[in-house]
Length: 397
Figure 1 (spheres, rainbow, N blue to C red):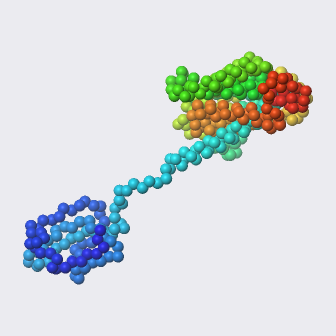
Figure 2 (figure 1 turned 90 degrees about the vertical axis):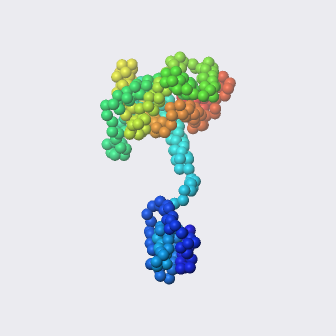
Figure 3 (figure 1 turned 135 degrees about the vertical axis):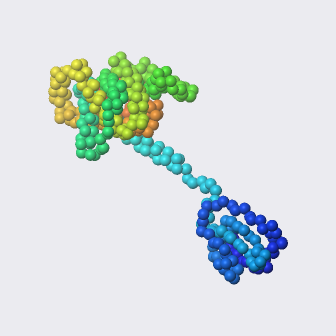
């Protein structure tokens, strides 16, 4: 680095410095502003700059025998325009920041998903107590969600997905699994208490691990398998100690577990590499499931039973029953839509664990919202129907 260059005639001699007139090898640098023939350009043999100069090369530094003049060629450039130094400067980890933002977004999805599911379960149980037709109730839930999304696409509130035949072909097995799981869960809740259904359905992570291991060939560390022991044990203990045990309700919850595991795995595979968002993916899933379920619902229950049951429910409950059905259907679609938005960001196993954690809020929250005490460990509490609180808990359960 040079801050100034001063040349003097007495500074060099032909015999003392370069007797063989050898040239200094020229380093290879990128072209930069060059200053050539400093001696001829500046007769006073001096050059100074306010900015330091970086010497790039010196060619043919020699002294002429005839003229006793130095012949100099110097290439230089300003130091502040020099090539960047090879220094690694550590900046804040961008990947870590993005990962933290992703976790916050997933946390918001989970909280919204659980809250909407709590509201759905309250209205769903009210509707099933007054109108015990789970096949029609399941059909209305899918129909309401399909209608909401069609309106959203028509009004441009949400962008309509671009799909093709291959997309719907891939979606069909997912829709079959979703239909079976949805109907089985609704049948279970129509036969037993909501708490019992969700306790049995809390075994979904066990089904997810077993299906992934034996059917898909995935492997998990030993702590994952050990964590399934208390889950399976708790479900078994709950089934054995349930006073109002019903085999149809129990089998419905178990079938729902298995069906939803397959749905989550197939959904995640179908969503990978697709331009369809989680929200639109579930909307398409609802529409296809509605087409699958409707003929089976008519065959199993029939419109005549529906008409009689509807009139009876309206006469007993009043106009509020209609609003219960609407709320149950709308909140079913909303909580599933948010759950698929979270599934778009996580693995099926993580989704199943989140689904299990959701069931804690489903069991506890209605008791808090209805201002009910938590059930006592004494069996006599189950049969206590005389007080107002006992009547309210029996209507919910």
